Length: 139
Image (cartoon, rainbow, N blue to C red):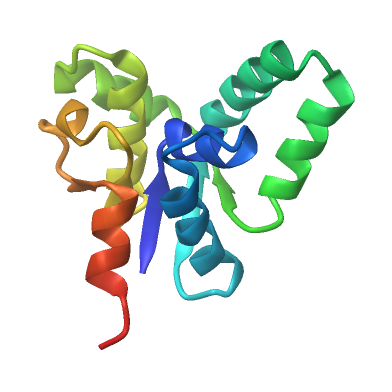
């Protein structure tokens, strides 16, 4: 199953943000073990780097976090068509609209995010990490 990880999930992992770290980390582990195909949009990488560098104050550490992350997720391009589609979606947050458009083009089954309500206009359903883990746990 292909899922697109929202930037906030990735920041939970990179910055070990509580109380969200555990569920987000479990999701990324599913990607590392090839249980799922987790993708991230190219735009998320610059956001993660910027926020992580600002918070940790270390360029090398922020870059290494990106390098480590890219070992377990697939990076997908944000295309011009994604931007055009995002404009049409009418989201209040343009970044979320771009993520939704990218998830749709990539035929992701879910957008995994902590902000499910922000994706109410998305054709790809949004789900929290905890809900995703509950749905995908072995019987």
